[in-house]
Image (cartoon, rainbow, N blue to C red; front, side, top):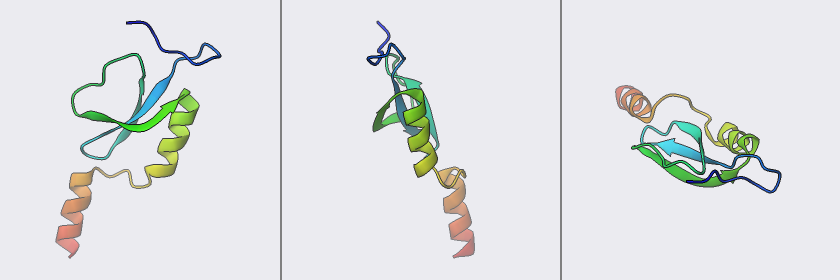
Length: 73
C-alpha cells in the first residue's frame, strides 16, 4: 500500500481513539490496530496532535473514570 501524503509530501495522519477514550495518531496509509477507531480528523501530524490536545482533557481511561464516579456517587 502506498503512503498517503499531503500536497507538501508530508505523511497524512488520522486522529484515533480507543474504547477507553484514549487518543493517538496513526499514519493514514496503515490499517488501524484492533480496538482503535478514526475520530474523523485527519491531516498533518501537527493538525492531529492539536485536535487531540483540544479534546482529550481527562487522561484517565474511561473505565477508571466510571469506577471513580460510581464510588463517589
